[in-house]
Amino acid sequence: MAERVNQRIMLTKRLLSDAMVNMLKETSIHKISIRDLCERAGLNRSTFYRYYSSQFDLLQEMEDDMIRCLLEILQGETDGVQCLCRVCQYLEEHLEMARLLINNNVDPSFPERLFSLPLVQQSVFRSQEPRLSDTERDYVSCLVINGSFAVIRQWLNKDTREPPELIASLISRAVLSPMV
Image 1: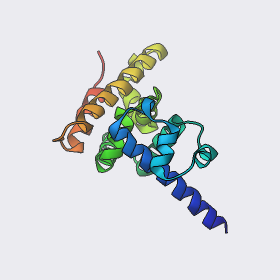
Image 2 (image 1 turned 120 degrees about the horizontal axis):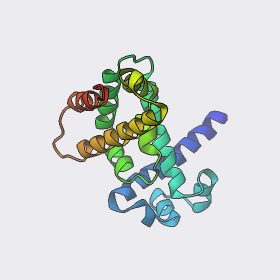
Image 3 (image 1 turned 60 degrees about the vertical axis):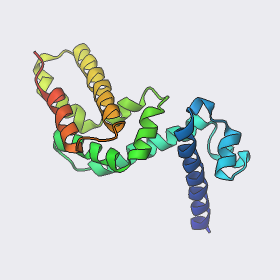
Image 4 (image 1 turned 135 degrees about the vertical axis):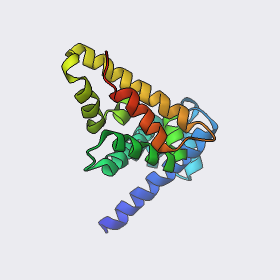
């Protein structure tokens, strides 16, 4: 019986997520009402509120799912460049969702969560370790995270994209080169 309930919950959340994706293609999340979202999903509002308090909570769960998938993919990876390459490959393989989450992002912590993967941070600071104070390290981290996010966003929004390996290499060269 528990499996049936879990499948029902998963189906409900999938319907809401799919409706959100379709609506985000048409409009900003700020213009999406719960009523319209539920109508598109074929569910009533009480069902929506059983799982989420707002459309932003649903978007947050979609972001969390992407981060969780990336962490699974990167498990056991020890090379910083390969880590970035796998992130880029995943984003390209899930292009529609990646574009929607990155372009419709209202969560200022999402870029940080996406690019603060421990392996990336270790790789960046290993090359900078002796030269950076804690304060400088915070600023460099901000630059790396937001700069990488901007490059990824521009790359994902292109109709004709360069291979993921090239973008990963570009980011890693910019990030991993020692600072003066």
